[in-house]
Image (cartoon, rainbow, N blue to C red; front, side, top):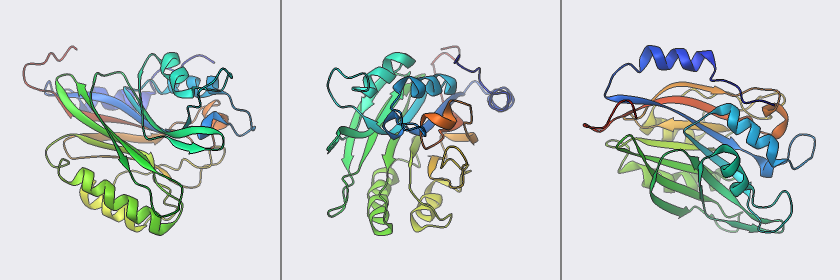
Length: 264
């Protein structure tokens, strides 16, 4: 399957709303790849790579990346996806399960400045983490936080409090983007309300299950200095079968540092 061109909705928004020389428009996404296991039960990293190329993004937060070492065709998924998309990969904290190393990751086309990995684990529940990556975008620093919250309400509240501590001191002054599978099935869940208080209420397209999306589990938020323009679920023949989640994609504006070239 060939990579799709950028959709007309996003292109129109970029042309119509990002004309200022002091801002640049980026495409970002969040995608729970489900260990590259599709709705047909097959583990096929090539299909996930096809979807990533369709997205044509500057940065993509990934969840459920199985990066098990070994010679099998399905091993080292993060390395494969980075190579197939010509992007730099940053791995988060690894969760050791019976089938290997598993966790969050970021793919980016921009230089990586700083990487931080935060443990969000709660009691005896499955270990969780947040990957916190600062990248350089046309002379400006933008922080991407990639996470995947737990399955129980108490677990998510604990994890969200930790994320709010990470975000709280920087969101007002720096571009911060939160990408993740938040696992909130109810539209007014408490962790969502906490995030809305900092980032504002953001569009929440339905992304799960991929074949017939009913729930907005996968979310993108941006601080006021990283203005979101368009947020939508990416639907294509491949994305409907490659994982049990659809990717959610957004266009956003970030400020450009004075003196950087607007043609970079």
